[in-house]
Structures are given as structure tokens and as C-alpha cells.
Length: 260
Image 1 (cartoon, one colour):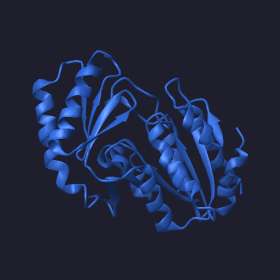
Image 2 (cartoon, rainbow, N blue to C red):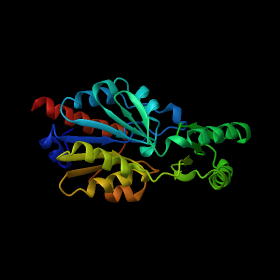
Image 3 (cartoon, rainbow, N blue to C red):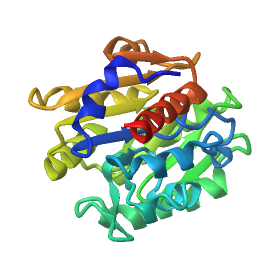
């Protein structure tokens, strides 16, 4: 595979270039249980190789600790991680919660303990430290319980319920999304070019934030699935068929750098 023309600016701007990725559905196949997600074969090696030529970062809804473990040894090679839609970040090997989010960890832990006691068995709870996702992918009947529970919990605790793909996630009432995380990266690194790879509606704010910097060349890659949102497809410069193809694009970029 050749490097898509949309990545020309990123290639030419390196090393002053920034590659930002989501994880689930982007470089990992969509799975029934969140703990089963793994990076596509070869993805980690490609990302590590790319750190020799540009800056690489992840912005995802996963906890940073989970991502670092699944993508080892990327963190040691300089890959940056922003997790939980911006509620925490890896800095110098330490996971640092957003200052406004940190006080809500105990509240979320209490809600998780309640879910363990009362949730129907078909509800999959994914504790994230500063977030709690309740999944109904494998049991649509669980959706009614999850929506009722999260609505009530949000009203009584002050947490905010966010719709995600086949799940509802409770997060601190702090105005953070992937767009804020992208803004943070752009402000810190001031790249001449940036590219973002994502697959879900929650990735759209990162694309919009990237586009809002006209002095920075940008490219958005949408990794398609049968669950994917039309809004992400419409916003993208390039549509890819699946995570395997996304990794092939990254591999082509790596090979182009190696041949430079």
C-alpha cells in the first residue's frame, strides 16, 4: 500500500508532526467484551517505529493504565496517552487525573459497587477509575435497565451519563471531550501537521478541534464499521474499511520514512 495523499503534509512536516489515534475500532477490532480488545498484529511495532520520525499520541475513552498495558512498550518509546476522553493523562510515567475530575473517583467507585450488587447479569460493567461504562452490546434487553439506572444515578450523584457505542458511561461533570484533549496536544507541541485516526462519534470533537487550527495542516481518517456514524465519515478526508487497513496505512507511512 502507498501512503495516502492526505498524509503528505504529515510526512513532509516530520519531525514537527503529530499522529493521534483512537484505539477501539481504529487499531483494534470491535469486540463483544471490552477486555478482549487487542491491537491488530504488527500495530505496536509500527507505532514504535513511527516515534523515530514524528510524535505519536492516543486519545481514547479507555483508562490510561489499560492502554499502556495493552500497548507496551509504546509508553517507554515516547508515545503519549490521554485517556477517559481527557480526564487523565500519562506524564513522565505517572497517570495524572485532570484536577477537576480527580475528586469524583470515590463517587464512581461507590456507583460501581452498587452496580455489582444490583445489575442484571447481562449488564457488562467496565470500571475506568474516573468513569464507569455499562455495556448492552450483547443483550439489548439490558439497555432499558442501564438507561434507567444511569439516569437516576446522574440525578442523585451529579455524574453525567454519556451515550457511547452500545453503552452508557458515567463520568465526572467536567466539560472534557476528545476535542479538549486534541487542543491540549496542539497547544503543547505546536505541530506543523497533524493526522487523526478514529471510528466513533466521540472522535468527532478531536477532528473538529484539529480543523479549528488553520495554520496546522490536518488529515482525518475514519475507520469504518457497520456501527460507524455518518458524521465521522462526512468529516473524514479518508475512509478506511477496517482496523487492519488502518494499520496498513501506518505501515506504509513507516516504510516511506524508512526509505526517505
